Length: 218
Image (cartoon, rainbow, N blue to C red; front, side, top):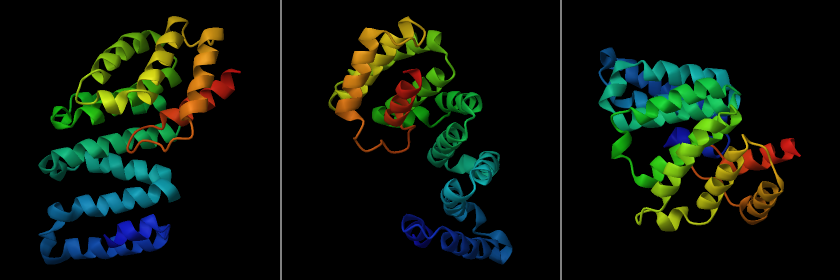
C-alpha cells in the first residue's frame, strides 16, 4: 500500500526506495517470505519503471514470467502477461506484443476471468493487428467479438462505444485499412462522440489509437 500510494502521488523514486525495503524484508530469514510477497515487490518495480525506465519494466516482467513462484498465482500471472503486452506495445514492438497476447488465450486462468475482461483483451488484439496491417485476421476476430458483445451479461457494457468501434474495424478490414468516404464519416462520428471518454483500465487505449491512426491516414 505504501509503494502504491507513492506511485499514485507521482513520487516514483520514493516508491522504488520503499520497494527496496520490502525486498530486504523478503530476503530475511533465508527468504522464507519471498514467494509470498514477490508479487507486491515486482508490481511496485514495474509500475514505477513504466514511467521511469520502460526497458527495465519489460525486463522485470519477462523475469517474473520465468519465475516458478508465479505458477502459485495464476490470476496474477495473467496480469503480468497483459502488462507485458501493454509495455511492448507502448515500446513500439507490436509484433512481440502480439506474440505475448496470443499466449494469454492459452493461459490456464484466462477462461476464469469475466467476459468483460476477455472482450477487452480481444479489442487489444485487434488494435495490435491493425498496427501490424493484419487486416485479413481482423475480419473474423471482429465478427466473433461482436457476437461476444451481444452476450446478455455484457451487452450493456459493450453497447455503443465498443460495438461502434468494432463496426468501424469491420468496414476498414474490407479494404485492408483503406479509409473510404463511408469509413471516414464513421470514424469522425465515433471520435466526436467517444474520444473524450476515460480510457478503459488494463487494456490498450483503443480510443487514442483510432484518433492517432485516423490523423496519420488523412
